[in-house]
Length: 166
Image (cartoon, rainbow, N blue to C red; front, top):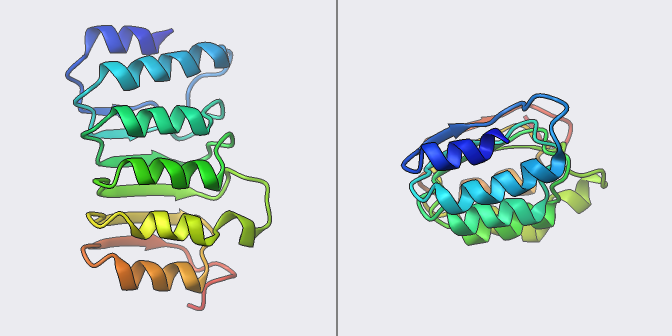
């Protein structure tokens, strides 16, 4: 797949936008390609994985573990991820500075998605300066935790949704 070619030809790549992949590509090939990228692109700082329905918790964890310089991640519409998987990955990359999430990753009740483990993982990112939650249904508890525990945030994006007192 193209991911193997990217890994071979651009080992010094720092930013990679893989959003909205074309249909018809093997999920297995894409998963293996993403793992190869995470090992080959040691200088990767920013990645956009939006629309990659094949990505699972293990893929995201490999990416966060292997890309030591990773600072910015966009993961909108990644239906194979769970709250627990995202939480574990966030703990692997405490140097993350920018994070964009949507709540399309899990078909659970709202309270099960944004549990205390998820909130704790999010606020553990002490260097976080930008957070985009415009596509995430957030609670007052999450908003309060972010405001109280992440002092360096200079850019916050969220939509006024049902569970937030706006």
